[in-house]
Length: 373
Image (cartoon, rainbow, N blue to C red; front, side, top):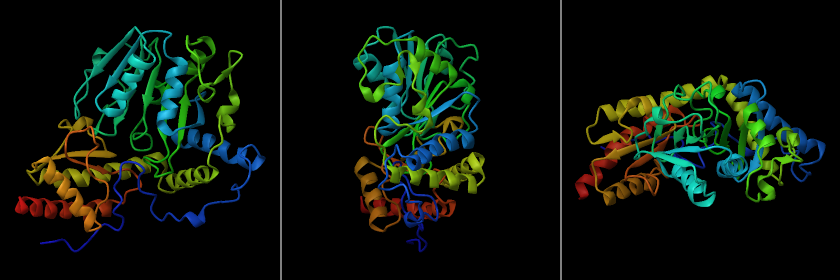
């Protein structure tokens, strides 16, 4: 029978993601709107975005945080173009975004001494093959594959290279081994349900040292430049952004950070993601027609949950359309380059009761599609 209970919020997109529970745009502090981002009021808000991020994430002493242009992509490009080339590079990928970084490194930056370690969707390359004397570029959580690194034990404490970690769907959802990471990037619209267009760049002291000691053999657009006269532009990490940000997006991010603290900080948001994954896991374990794309439980994402179904590609499309038509779930089809299936965002802003309500609808839609074939 068709279920009677629907999710209160059917937004399960993997980016932009659902806004936090209880979100009301009219409750944002809009006093910064129409003001210069370089006025005292704008600088204060941007500095808070950096300082509060460092405090809530409990970053190690000396780590710097900046708001940068062009979302997570901009943050990663900015870091790679500014710092790679000083030593060999190992780039890891097991999904589309990581593959994009590999393409940038080998085709755009054209680094001769680059080694690519890859795996299929739902799997990881052998992390023990990574040479930590090289710079290492990887995604912590594969947003389009539902597979994440299980930990950072494979990264040496005595590494000579820098680690560049695209963590856009991992920060605030998963335990991050900050001391193992030198360059970390993420975007507001993932786990916190913030607005798009802005990226967060976190640098360790080792990354700052690289910036101040290495001059890349390539021209850098102004939007990528983090040093002047061989020294870090410290203002970038206290709210003096390279370009003009959306102050509406900034206060939206500050609202999201406040919400994180209200649910118990990072431990609270991680717990919310884990609970959502557990609900999906219980459903998958009780139905033989649906499986996790990541077969190994230890590497399954608790934010971007990717599933394969015992259906043909057109049937999966029909299932996704059916759920959208009934206003049960929007935007849950697999990423365009990923294997056919579902991708259900289970990040911290998703209420567990909505995941619970969605599961019976998945079973109903599956039966409908099978009956129509």
